[in-house]
Image 1 (cartoon, rainbow, N blue to C red):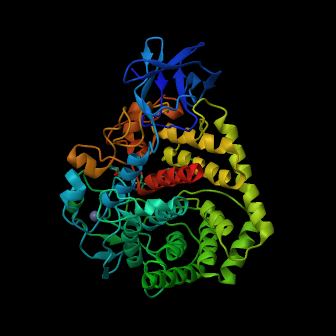
Image 2 (tube, protein in one colour):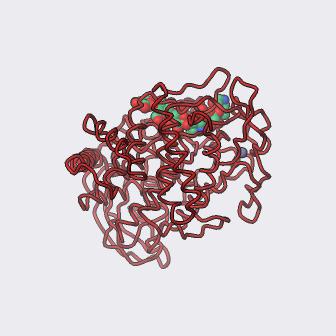
Length: 527
Ligand code: G3I
Ligand code: 9MR
Ligand code: ZN
């Protein structure tokens, strides 16, 4: 029986506003109970009724902002009880550490020792040279992080992943010193990915290969067992620009700690940018015979927009500035996903210390606020307080939901409108269990756990690796398992905790990094 009372199954920061959800009709009274001694610490009435079409349910919000004594609690309505949750300071710190550690556990090309990796330890994988597609040429493309539940390594999602992590560090610099039980701190972990990215740049042209993977997806075994030939797919316009953009960001972070490395990154970034300008702006498609992650993308302005802003911020050359400004005057948009990277460009431009067009900067800030305002409209349409409607549940819906909250946080920084922060928090609670699926979408955290993520090491070891953000409901029913289990479900409930449901139950680098960024933004706001 799904629970009628939904809470953030990890918990609530003691000073934050606090909401739970009652799924059911009619007016209700609720009590917050101290799980330690059974005493009632708060009694309240549920708010107005929402008729939520996305989730196919009626529900009401339960507010208990007043409860701020640290402890473990549950909520009770009549005989119905929620799972227990914490109210505490630093309530998400362990979750954050685990989400960060995930990147280490996704490392390709080196031994992961038991000491750090536990049951996910394995010898070095994917260590052979990789064939450049359709040639007799082989290159060293080793290293980096496996993209997701599969073992492919793709530049486009890699670039947005490290961009998220850099922005997280910008918001919450203390993340850089956080020890999360791996041999590296965050900046070194990101460097592990970057060292691999550098190998995917063609030294002659400066163009960047789209990805390295086997021709197809392997079975559900540990990575070192995947022995098929590695293939480097052709270069692409999107990977070349995303590479340029994300490495320009990296320059700013590595300059103070390793100037030689920063110089190498700067050269690679500029070279990629210049190369992209000579390329035909077309979307990538898998070459014949390769069926792994495509990350094809037909909207191609945003990559140039992002790269131009980032290279201007890092290097100050007027030509980048002009390209960005011309584009921004024509069209301002938003997006932190692998497909739409406009927001990274916007952020780079409004945060650089270099000279910018102040009018344009004002326009961009206003556009960020206007978009946040439109998200707020959606948030108010349902009791979950999330910026989603019935059309929002696409592949990776959790990422889009998290990124909307990141957008609210970006707007909060500019406007200090408290409601933006409050609603961003509702998105966090959604991910951690206050959602129509009644599950915590972060593996290993919460009470109703995801047990069968589409993640090969988890399947091989028969235990879900902790600290992974799940893709979430996808009403497109993009895999046979989802079709079998979710046909007829309301959009927000098109999710199934089955290994083979890759369209709803997979994990990726950039879903984790998105959540890390959001928590970092909230941390910074609460300082
Ligand atoms: O953007 C459109 C939207 O306009 C439309 O309304 C909606 C309706 O379905 O579809 C949206 O596009 C979807 C897109 O994801 C949104 O990001 C596509 O249908 C959907 O097919 C696409 O899924 C992508 C999937 O690969 C298949 O290409 C996911 O975003 C992407 O995260 C996922 O990435 C895979 C890699 O290929 C391989 N590794 C695992 C990884 C995660 O599943
Ligand atoms: O495991 C693959 C996953 O990482 C991808 O996101 C997904 C879509 O590209 O494909 C998965 O692999 C499946 C393949 O597409 C179809 N045959 C079954 C594979 C494992 O479920
Ligand atoms: Zn590997």
